[in-house]
Amino acid sequence: MAPGYQKSKEMFEQAQMVIPGGVNSPVRAFKSVGMTPPFIARANGSRLWDADGNEYIDYVCSWGPLILGHRHPAVMHAIQRCLERGTTYGAPTDLELTLAQMVVEALPSVEMVRMVNSGTEATMSALRLARAYTNRSKIVKFEGCYHGHHDSLLIKAGSGALTHGVPTSPGVPENIAGNTINARYNDLELLEKIFAEAGSEIAAVIVEPLAGNMGVVPPAEGFLQGLRNLCNKYGALLIFDEVITGFRLSYGGAQSYYNVMPDLTCLGKIIGGGLPVGAYGGRREIMQMVSPAGPVYQAGTLSGNPLAMTAGIATLEQLQQPGVYEELNRKSALLAQGLSQAARAAGVPASFNRVESLQTCFFTGHPVNDFASASTSDTKRYAAFFRSMLEQGIYLAPSQFEAIFVSTAHTDSDIERTVEAAYHAYKAAAQ
Ligand code: PLP
Image (cartoon, rainbow, N blue to C red; front, side, top):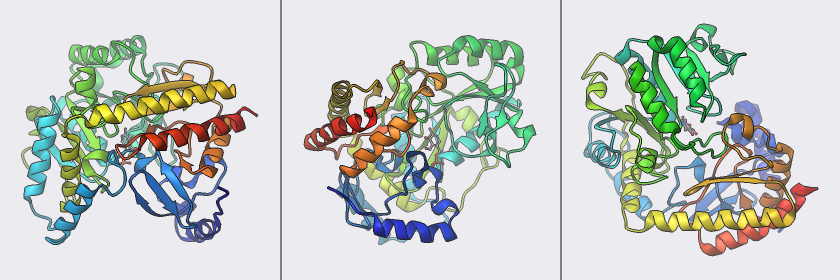
């Protein structure tokens, strides 16, 4: 297939006149792979079609929410029924209650949950709550973990291991950045030093229990338990950002998968079934501090909106069916195996990380276990690989440092086709 992109190109030109960079979220612009993005016209199952009629097997799945693929019949049907009752009331509904009960039942550490509209809102609100609960200001985050775009978390490491963070974006005030301490993923020794120095000021440690935003990087044996122990020792809260991993690694999220319990959990993506959503929850005693039960203010016009709740409930109902995760993970393993064989056959140095239905092929000869090792990837090679895959009808994330999301809608023959295409793409990347 030699797809044309004429219509997409024209729309991108026009979009750049009225939307900054032509997109509503930066990675969609395809800058790091040296292309302009196809504009998507429709989707179904494992497939996307763009405005020029090109068809793709989709491994972005809207960046994680679509664990059932596009337009799952049960989800579509539920949304249609919900539409007949209206779209939003700004008042409590049975749907919010049902989804909250499902989340509380699924996640062992969550006794109460508050719905918001995005993952960013979830982490922002969780930090406010942790600061209020502990009466402390500082937050520890890990380099390479992404928790949304609010001020406290758009922070990179300052120079020197124990220095406080510096903003990664103009517009983030220095004094806010100064309250965020950057640690290294999978490095407990450094975190111990940080706590020894500033433990009495640290309100919370926030972490992606399985990192997905520097590509997939699993926690080393004992890392999450080490975080739990240090937080206990110094009276800080442990926040798991399960926006990607929640209902993905298992129905009980990463906390069940790794058997380490956080104090607070942030959710998003899958619990909205493809509609805008976020949530934060945790121990009752902490969550009771949220307004109006307690003094910590947080609100939202469309929070818990009926459509997102409905899509979330329908998605979780599907995930409760026996064998769903086993089948999803089997297909993901098949893909990982095929990709690594194809990379070897094409002679490209590649390092594969996979945990269940999340995986990344890093274009590096080194094992990847933190941000520094992820950064050894050859992003030019990734760009060549990506472009060849797209030309062959395989839609991957337009950046090396993202996950491949496998959905229940991917078939074995989709995976076979993907692996065949990958061999040619790895060859293109090898040049
Ligand atoms: N946390 C994690 C782990 C994420 O991957 C993301 C987004 O990709 C967010 C938070 C922010 O979520 P949102 O984009 O819904 O604001």
